[in-house]
Length: 321
Length: 294
View 1 (tube, rainbow over the protein chains, first blue to last red):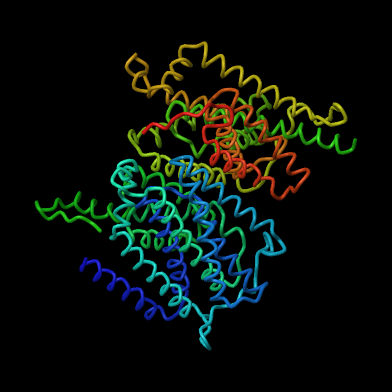
View 2 (cartoon, each protein chain N blue to C red; view 1 turned 30 degrees about the vertical axis):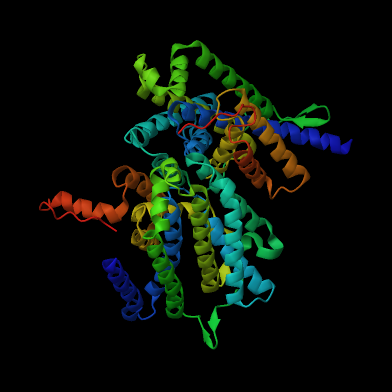
């Protein structure tokens, strides 16, 4: 457990010091979205990688967070922080209620049901024009502020988003190494066996689903205040698949893997600017080839490659986190 | 009287799109029954049917009939490639891995189509003109008749194939029990490949006959696929009449909802029905309950 703590501290230091050499430039802006996407991927990974339950509707919770905050602050004059808390709690309650019928389903049916939830949410964002502005989007969302400190530059937003992200990463790390996390993995391996051992599988699946929705909603709120403009296109099925791709690439069942996946998939389109429209093909290829050839994601795949190239001495195998 | 005419009109167009959902639902069920896989790329086969027909017609200058045959044939080949490259390498994959792979494949197919033919929405000319036929105060397009005719033919064809040919019976045997089928000498691998062939052909045919009515583009596959899946779920994932009924009911409800309530929420209707059925009767509308096996 000690090495886990050191790992986290090193990671946090890197995150906090990273913007200094970048001096608030374009890359800082990209890294804000790495933080947001990273937490979204992490939320899905808790559900998918640990508990083994797929969700193709993560964009819906992210969107509900963003639209909830956006609408409450622009149309009803809520304080952004209050709005964030209210919205996140509402989304969590919604996810908890939704979780019971949805997570009774398994495999393909679960995937389709969560996908259905995502599509319905997206249609709602598009159609409730009076509240959300419909397809043309919602603008004029205020920046977050603490006293006189307004989060209106890339650098300030970077620290804002990453403070939340680090908090959620720490929470997730503690969670997966707890009794709860072990129970989730037991459900992943065999739900029946887990239940026989006294794990309340149904409730725990709903709880982790709720947690991932809550995390996504918080990130949605942050996203809308960072962007100050949102439109339904950012919260569609495509984005749910993107988050799924991040989890699969980084590594199912790895907290840092999610962040790594988010980093790669957020940077990749920036680097492939010339092929803007075609990043979708790259996602498709990555999903297929990674699942076939590197089912453990990069977090397990890279060490495995090293071992393949340079066969290790006996006894030097180390289990990974 | 005015309202009645309108309702008749909505029901007719609903039954037409419902037939399409039924065909797509069948194509889902065919693969599911022989492999246990829900193919998330199913909608892309439908899209390929329409897009490839337009391509053969406009660019290759083939006559319509030949263009349709070519499109269905090419889609079928893609179905074979898909099974060989993405499904077969993972012999004992978990459902999770298969979901992710078929989603990946669907994105890939969509992306390649977008790359080759752009993002424009295109229309296929109607097969035999657009002179409306008036029936009981409502207008019926010749294309509607084509859709009903092709759907009936495909359903009858499937029924004959699955009940009266050796290959069809072998495929049904695989869906009941793969191991037992293998033991009596059925090549399960070949039957899986067959199921992809039939499914891709049926799916793409659905895409071809709907294209003159609704236009087509690289991204129509997602919605059509999901609604076809909804039809299949309503029918309990069987490849029989249940799925057909499911499709027709879905199409009619959707058309009535869009016409009488709100067209913006048209797509949401299908998903509400999907969720309701998954929550309340996951075994389908017309089946008796089955106990879950562990």
